[in-house]
Image (cartoon, rainbow, N blue to C red; front, side, top):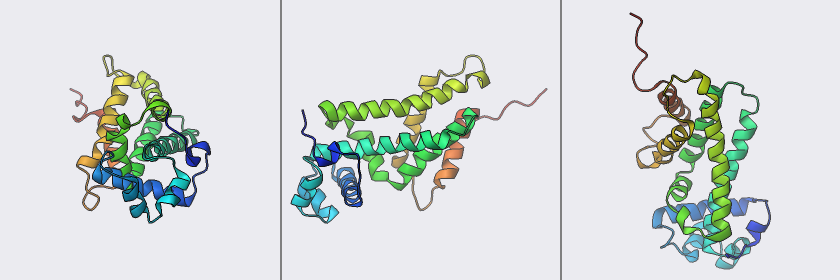
Length: 205
């Protein structure tokens, strides 16, 4: 079982740890988790190796903390922001906007979360997967609540949620910050696609 360092034993994320995790995410995204070293991360974070080990016990714990912190933050933000929204369409817009706003501003985290989950083992992987399931469950419930508005034969909620995550999580392969739409505009287009499809509604005869 991986050893938990100080950061995993406490809930607090201070500014130095935030900076270390951001640097680690960029290093893992650029070099790949297998090729990146603790020394590389420390150099990018501008801390000593000893200073880095004050916060984490291993490179795997760095990967765990990046992924857990991302999904824990997304869950907390969605729960807080959606509490006053009664219409599931509004909750869908909020979910997509929050997801895209976070990851378009932290593209390295998106790359790491998309491709490096299999590098985690034991408790680290179990904790991240539990948080991912919690996050995924919120989106499935939104599609469940949209059921009364769906036409007969519409896509099942779980399939719709999986497809939507597939759309959002590969945005790093084509999105260009300098020429692409804002996160809010992109989120609105994605929601329109999922609520109304590509083709307009047929005109009455």
